[in-house]
Image (cartoon, each protein chain N blue to C red):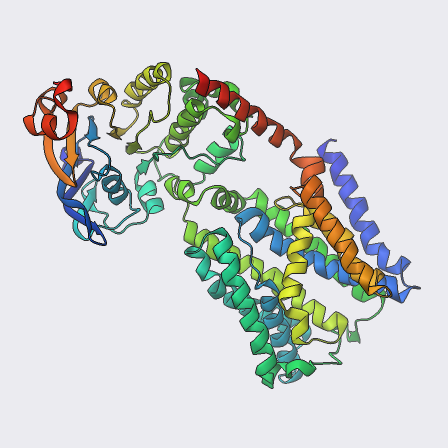
Length: 327
Length: 242
C-alpha cells in the first residue's frame, strides 16, 4: 500500500468514525457504548505510551484520571469555569501530580515499580473516599452538567462526535510522538536504560517527560468520562479501572499504535453488552485473557500482524548462537 | 591552555568503598592522547569500579575525575557521553528488539556539538562488517556481531575516549584475533582505555598498562616492563607467565 493509498484509507476511516454517532442516534444504548469505547481508547493510548513504549506499568493511572476529573468538576461547579478551560487546567495539574507519582520509577525497576504504583493507587482511592470536600466521598458526585458548545449543552450524537475527535487526536498524537526522537528515546529506555545513558540519552528526563505526557491522556480521559457519564465516585477511579485499561493494552498489543485500538474495540464494550448476564462477563474476560497469554503473548495485534518476523529472527539468532558456542 | 597537552582523562587519588569493602584506594590514573591504556588485575581488584567512576555510573568517596581538563566528578553518564566520553559494558548490551539500523538511529539521537563533522554511518558499518546486517534484529546477532554493533553505536557519538570493559569477553579464539585487529584500527578514531584480564590482548593492544590489585595501583608503565615487575608476577600473573 502506497502512502497516498493509506492517506485515503485513513481519511475514509476518520470520516466514517465521525458519521458513526449519527448512525447510532436511534439506539441510545449502542451510542453510549460507542462513547465509552472512545473514552477508553484515549486512556489506552496513554497507557500504551508508558506500558508499551517506555516499559513501565503504572497502576495508579486511574487515580490520575480521577484527580483531573475531580479538579475539573470543582473548577466548573464552584468557580464557574467553562469545561473547555477547566479540562486542560485540571489535566495539567493531574500531569504534574503524575510526574511526582512517577518519581519512584527512577529508582525502582519493572515489577517493583508496578508494586509501588499499586500502593499509590490504593492510597489515592482512599483519599477520594475519606476527604469528601472535593469528591463527596463514596456517595459520589452526580448530575455533572455536560459541556456547552456554541451556547448549547452537548448531548446526543454531537457529544459522541466530540469524543471521536478526541480519540482520533489521542491516536494521532501517540503516532506523532513515536515518530519523533522522543519516541525513540522512550523505546531506548524500555530496551536498556543503562545502554541508553551510555549513548547520551538522559533517562531521568525521558521518564519524567513520559509521565507528564501519559498523565495528560489519563486526565483528559477522566474529565471526558465525568461529563459524559454525568456521575463519578471513587470506584470509577480505583485499581480495577487501572487494571482494565492495562488489560486493554496488553490484550490488543502493547508497543504498537494499532494494538490499543484493537484491544479497546474488543474489551471496552464487553461489560455493557453483558450487563444482563454479569457472571458471563468475568468468565468470557478470563477465557480471553488466558487465550491471549497462551496463543498471542504479544497481544492480538502484536502477535498476528507485527511481531512475527521479529520473533522468527530472534529464534533463528538463538540457534545461530548455539552453533557459535559449539565452535 | 594548550588542549593537546592536557590528558584525555585523569583520576586523582580516587577512593571508593562499598560498605566495609574498600574497592579502590587512592588510585590516580591518566589516559593520555593517542595512546591505548590497558588496565589489568585479578577478579575483584576494582577494574570495573574504576571505569564506573570514570563514566559517571558511580561517585567517588574522595578524589576527582577530570575529562579534557575539566572536573567531571558527579556528572551523569549521558552528560559525559555528550562531552565525548563513552563506554561499553562487560556483558554485551544492545537494544535487543531493534534492528541494527534502529540501534544506530537511537545512538545518533544525541545532538553532536556544533562544528563536528557528520558521522559517516555507511563507512563505519562497512569497516565493522555490519553493512549486510542492517535490517537484522540486534538480539538475533551473534555475540561477535553484537560486540561490533556496540562499537558502531558508540562511534555515532563521535567520542573522544572510549572505555572498553572486556571487549573480547565470551568470544572464540578466532574472534578474539579479529577483534584485536578491529580495536587496533579503532585507535585512529578515538582514545581507548581497555580493561582485560587476558594478558594476550593487553600485550597486543596497550601502549601502557596499569595494574590494580585489591583496589591499589601497583604498577604503571609499558607492558613489557610491567609484566616483568616482581610484585605483579607474585600477586597476579604467577611465575609461569614470567
